[in-house]
Image (cartoon, rainbow, N blue to C red; front, side, top):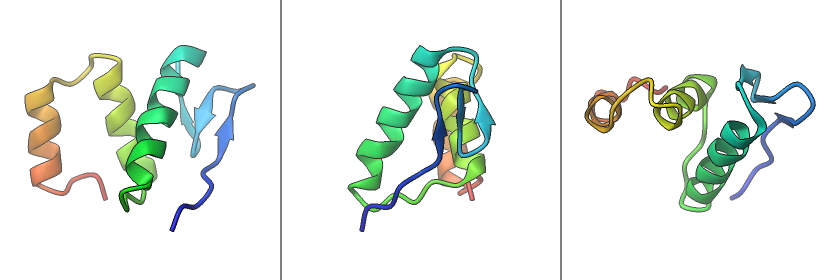
Length: 73
């Protein structure tokens, strides 16, 4: 079941998580939205992790480690 998530385009936030640009917000929202159709239920922590990956603050291997440890909950 798809549920709506809070996106504030004016303040550049997604579920309360701040983004540095509209393009970063949009990229993250699109990635999360696509995965929600597959059953993913985003948390504030998972939004922060995805944002950091998209911004290059964490690597793909770090993202995989976080995912394996289920540290996104």
